[in-house]
Image 1 (cartoon, rainbow, N blue to C red):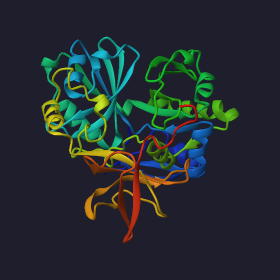
Image 2 (tube, rainbow, N blue to C red; image 1 turned 90 degrees about the vertical axis):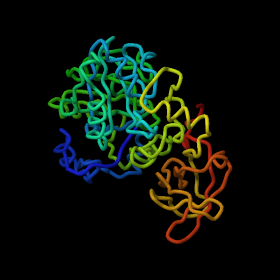
Image 3 (cartoon, rainbow, N blue to C red; image 1 turned 180 degrees about the vertical axis):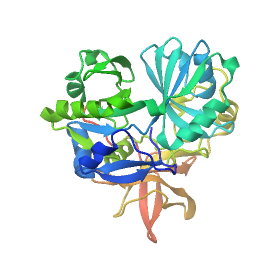
Length: 372
């Protein structure tokens, strides 16, 4: 889950910290964010081998509370909210009536009638319009945009548990993946969630915005024995791409359905009605026309977002995401291919600066830790 888009430049509560640390700041999704500190390759390696700290406070948070909260979220999202236990998080999407993806989201069940919905920064305004536009008093729940009230830090990597454990008395070994607790970390009340966008073990900490700097400093100090580095958006992108995690605005949009994006596993067509369900059932019955695949280039070059994809001599869309994989040393990417051409081993071409470079569909994730 990630994003690209939006215009007015905003700053997270940690903007001054990033400037003080010498981060290279760039516009992203309407925010000025650190793209790198020590360098993308070093930061990527730190997360894969040790541990890294991310500022993801640009993400948005909606609070949905009341007796009708579950039913409201069931209607607006594709996954089955009724299956959530208290303290569990769920990856999902919101869809248009025609099945296009409004955004990919995380839903956190805080109690029987209280939920937190985490949305992408670049879709915050659109998501709020979508959620509030489908909300009424008859839903028997409140809907609050609490995005300015929260900061969010992510600690990711093989040593993440040890680092976060130094800051809290909560036994983090008892918090499984996609579960969370509400407790104290570094003296600050937090939501401590075992979630992330890197493919590594890790935690995301939601804290009130006024506490962001203190929590960041505590994380840096707690991570020093393990070689923790601050991580920018550049490495965040290569890390998520190696796992084939979708980036909103690139890999998924309102023009792509979750079935096309290979997100059928979070699209519960049998749970009952939700916005976009009829269109998705129809697409499934007629046959999903295309699918999001991972590929590697078979010759020199890097397939960037927007580069033309050529199938049997004809143009077929564009590369949605692409980069040189720091872990694999190979140029990797994502794109949509027509039905029948999405299996591993199928070949096509990517046009790079006037040259047609051969590419091959591969199984994903690209990066697989030994033993997994």
